[in-house]
Image (cartoon, rainbow over all chains, first blue to last red; front, side, top):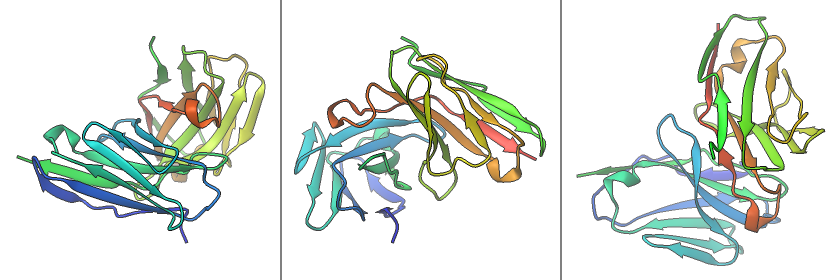
Length: 107
Length: 116
């Protein structure tokens, strides 16, 4: 089983839509979790950190289910500028990067 | 602050050539690391350093060397380039290695390396 599994997508959604991505991780010892955003041919940038059951930042909500070992990212009111790849990253003694879920928001 | 800088942005090598990818940060971060990113795979850790004079291997260290003589710089050396090392290389730094509250990794813009 892969350490981190994400649906690669792409998720094609219209502006204003709500979209959710799921991520499962295999190491139950993972202590904290991150969502990174990566634009095409650019470096990853931190979007959100998740330390307890969840976190919310504006239109973005991350939820953690430790019992089922999955993390989700919900994006409300999608903008064209949200088009990117979203990387799920659990942390144990190091960061483990998922392959990412690609989101394409269209007008 | 310039953040994390990497040079060169692009590089083409022939099999067997050696080269050094440069990485520097001006945020006084202790932790620095090198990742490679290949299509269909997540970023994989090559080497990392928790402070000047200290380096350790990551997930895929073979064929690469690193050193950390200063807090600011963390160069990655390819000893004898192979086509399997064609990839995008990212350098990253963070204030502290593992404390969740300070574990934000700041990535450089990447070096796109092709080995023929």
